[in-house]
Each structure stands twice: as C-alpha cells, then as structure tokens.
Image (cartoon, rainbow, N blue to C red; front, side, top):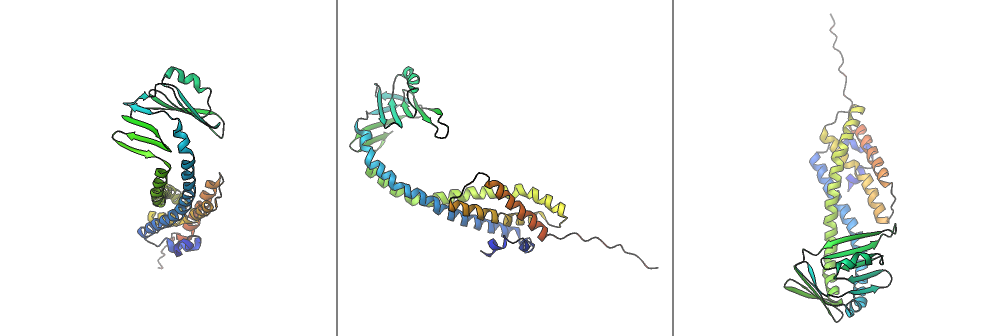
Length: 288
C-alpha cells in the first residue's frame, strides 16, 4: 500500500491532510485487517506446533491417569462419590487429592506445593508461582454443578454431564484437536482485529487532544477532521515497527516509550508540514 510508505515521510502529510476523513478511516480499517492477518499467522503456527504434543501426552498419560482413579460423582453441588480419601501424585510437581471430610483439608494443604483438592463442596487449587516461589490458593464452589459423573475406562475416562456422556480417550483428544485446528486462525484473527480496532480508535481520539495543542502552538489552520486524518497516518510507522518486533520475537519493557515517541514525532511533524499559517491582513491605507 502506497499510503503506508507515504506515512513514513512527514513531507507527504500536506497531501495526507487533504484526504477525506472517511477515506482515511477506511485506510485504518484495511491496515488493521492486514496487521491482524500477519500476526495471526505467527500465533496460529505457534499453537499448531503444540497440538501434536498434546495428542502425544494424551496417548502416554490418559491410561495411567484413569488406572486407579475412583468413580467421582457430584450431585447438586455435593460430592457423593467417593466417600473415602484418595491421593495420586505425578512426579514431584503435581498431586490430585479427594478428601470428603472438609475439616481435614486445610491442615493437609501445608504438605503440598502444587495440588488440586476435591472436597465435599469445593475444588481447591494450590500452586507455586514460578517467578516468586510463593504459594497461592484458589477455591471454586461446586454449587453450579447439577450432575457430573466421572468413571474410569480403558485408556481414559467416561464423562457424564446431566443427560449427555462421552469418553475422553486419546482418540477423542486427537479428533477434538483435528476439528479445533480449523478454527485457530479465524478465532485469533477476529480477536486481534477487535483488539487492534479498539486500541487504535482510543489512541486516535486520545491523542487528538495533543494534536490540538500542536496545532495551536504551531499556529496552523487545520480542522479537527484533518487532525484525526494526520493522527491515523501517524500511527502507521510505530505500529509497523511493533509488528516487526512481534514477528522477530523482540521484546523489551520500555518499547511503549519508543512507540509513543515515534507517534508524537509524526503527529508534530505532520501537523507542521500540513497546516498553513494564517495570513495577517495588510492594513488598507487610502491615498488622499
């Protein structure tokens, strides 16, 4: 797109300011669609790269998970099965515990760093934050569950929810992922397009206040719509840089300062190049 290249040269902002705001808004929509499509390729490729690992994990672990798992049943938010203590550990990283007697739950939490505990009315999760090593506990009520039944089967678990039931097996996981993979790109694309649109519109109107300040300080004759048009094209250079860095996997905390610096530079330069200084009226002198 020629307009994208033009937005990098402040001298072109004199012509850019002459464009209709509706046309510039259309350019912004197309620009957002393009960058959303590009970024979506990266994210969808990264997710699809992980999917075979999930299938492999299901093939290697579902059987061992269900091997000695007791039947679990929850009715009207209350655990009815099992009625005895159950515990299973996966290495040293994670444990799953069923303890129907709630008074025993909190004393046992001290003995686990990462654990999922099912009580008579709650699901309790305790995990250690990798960055700080501190533990955090979250509790979820079972009250919303009308009926849930988990029955161990060969290579998986039979799940019954209300009147529906299905088997979670390696084959089920493989079929589910195969269907899911078709929706990865469009879901990411529309989500990014929505987020970029919201972000850019907020950014455009917020920085239009700064554009008004630049307009007055530079003493330029520009309408508010012209300032918005300049603001749209001034977004392009920093956004293109952000997209390039995203694709290359370059991240640093202070990039937002660089982004704002580039955007403000193009706003100021564009308004300076586009506007005209009001002409002072020459006093009319009558010759007697």
